[in-house]
Image (cartoon, rainbow, N blue to C red; front, side, top):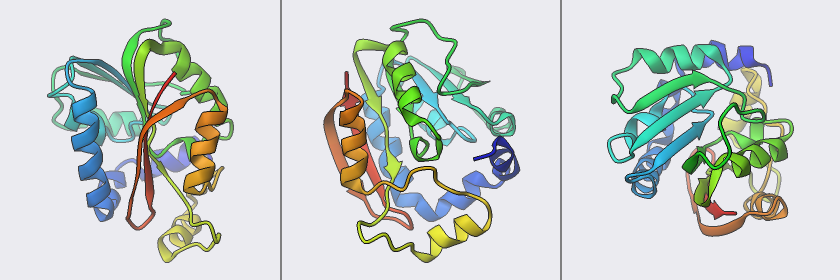
Length: 198
């Protein structure tokens, strides 16, 4: 999917996600607890919603996105002092090996054409005892799209991968990750919340 799509949606993304309030409230609470006192990297931060919510509990948060307008939008918000926003490609990170205690990539692996490359980079920058938090939108096993999914397609938001819950977990395991926590949160598009270790 084009970077331009996300640059276009940057100013309205947070407003649009209000329809997924239950999902985001769950993520803010759970990710914040896992990130408590830790150095965190967030990939595909969008306008910085998760980063802003978890930062008060974390030691430091580096929040990145490959769309410059998303980072521009994130920087305009009222952000805690321990958050730094920057443009970065999840499949080619500039960070040193073993640099972070926690890596978060929420609702993004399904839009990356080669998500295994992102997982390899995450493995490299994550400490050996670190946690990958990778919540992701999932599709029903019957393949039927709901109205919200159809609407997203109409406005140009297309998923490179339309995993079911089991397919998504198999994808993570197939890339060498051990799933330690997982659940499904219902929403306009259901979310598989997953925590993993190397």
